[in-house]
Length: 384
Image: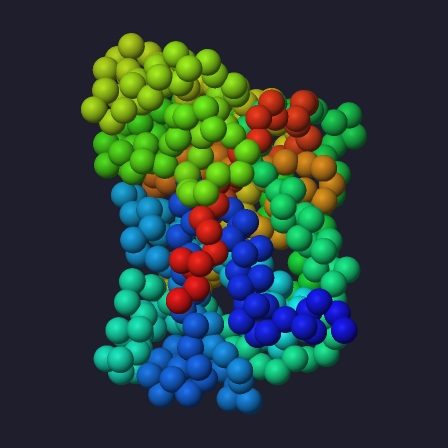
């Protein structure tokens, strides 16, 4: 008997959630939540998405934990949905690779419970996707599961200079990175920029506008809450990121300096002293030291955007995992997308007629990071 055969359904769900929590999210805020229901309760009180009513064992409602979501800027709602899309994609894959029959259904925008009891059980969760879990569909796929797990565990955001390959960046194959997809989309489009002159032009653009990160007081206060200025490294329980993931190793006095200079109350003074401008320039310089820049755009209308943003999270994750399999790293540059007027200028610079939802550096790091960090919440609070 295999290990998967000996596991109960609850064990398999917990195992899948434990691996899915390694998905990327903005500021590593990990805004996902999973509500577990019996089929009888779900169909009587929720029925959030039309799906088959073949015999089910469990219904999993995946959504945003409103208490953990970034909300200081309107664009962050898109980033939160993309984060859920990445988490849901991994959850879906790791369930199916354990031999379970799983049907994924997107929840229509403004989908809500059928009864007050259903709404009460969803309290604090904005549902975006439903996984209908049926009987085992056949043998588990332990080899494929182990390969995907290895890639997911290796995925990182690396904010370091990347090599400039002589023959261009290797072609990525995101369609092969994930065994299963939530849903196909013809409205999401990847583009890559490998031309050195274009990369330098985009680097100047990022350096010019990246300081906007600090000028919106509410947005920066929200970001600052997720920065850890301690000396900790390795696997850490919690969320957020370490300042040394942005700067490289820092002595104690420099970490203290960053903590003070970036404190929301002192940022206006730091800006006048040129401190935040220097950070913005450094990001522009990093963009200039990239092998390639990639971006994901959306060609649909606003009415379908909410569901497509979940699928954009899946597309982002597949691209990231495909890069990881080839020894490449990704570094999202979100600041140029979080403010509408800057995003529109970027789209003009790219000659892109569609709305850009994701923009990142891509390449092979010149050297491995001097320190490794992985902040993650424990799995127990995710499942309820």
